[in-house]
Image (cartoon, rainbow, N blue to C red; front, side, top):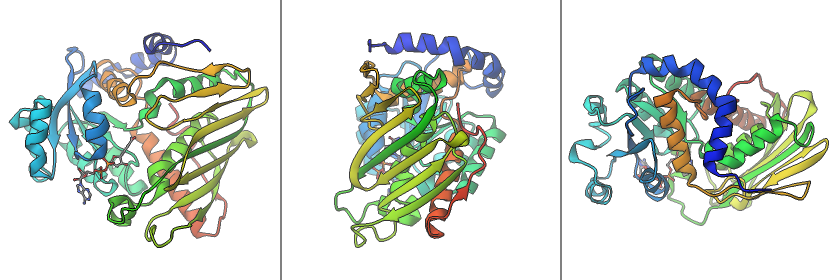
Length: 378
Ligand code: NAD
């Protein structure tokens, strides 16, 4: 298959879904009044300067067209000078967890991006919204559905935009999967399998193994990618789920799940299998349809991703930082009213599914019905 550049891809995307969204969401963007039409780059403050912020988000923000790294929020004072020097961040744009709320007075910060352990997402997202800032929340959205609702309500009340850190929603392979599903390139979808996981090398002190900080194990960390693949690979939300948990290292995974397999039932009888793990490297999606198949492998890492189709062609796009694409998409959503590719409702939908999977495991693999309608499908 021939290479499609991001620019060309964006143009064709805008011809379809995007234009309609511009028309319907522009007044809301203007109502929010923050960076709506003046064309300036929006200022982003990263909250939590751990591995993901340092390794992916901050470097990507050096390359973004519609936003830039303007500020930081950290609980580790030693990081302030290191980040200020490295990224030229002015003193007045540096906050800690205690004085964070005074960010309300800082007009150079438009977006707060919460990149903390999962148990801290709701608190900081809600405080950011109350400070009048647009919010990006890392995955998983929160510890439970109630917290997701609270974040969504706070953003609605403050009239600020809310996006999830679902980087794959902004990269072209995902859009191509959605296109093939929508246009029935290989006929009706009949089956999907999606896997997302990695081997967690021994570090018993990491917060991801601490349930009070993480809310769960492989499922909330990597499983959300497999859930998402299953949904955009079929274009449907599941109507029920059954799940099982497995462990080969119970002494290491004391509080959190090591591996989970789940079976989704979709409308019209489509079958979905997902698998997620903190104990093995898995990274793929396969979609079987009435007239052929397609697959991505790898499907959910930082890229480059790679794909194949049953007609012998390759799915191939030039690689760009997924984080850059994600943050530019969100900034454009704020500035120009383009579609929000990963709204808060999508994060909440995934948390509803996560809770149903844990419930099924607790109840011995029982089939748990799901009533999601088209919730979170963009
Ligand atoms: P990390 O452990 O590398 O960093 C966590 C940060 O939170 C550190 O700066 C740490 O100082 C701070 N922190 C504050 N209170 C803490 C506490 N009580 N315990 C531990 N750390 C505390 O984690 P990370 O990999 O950067 O993940 C942060 C968030 O980003 C998580 O929600 C994770 O799921 C998400 N994430 C998303 C992606 C993605 O591809 N979208 C990738 C990695 C992480």
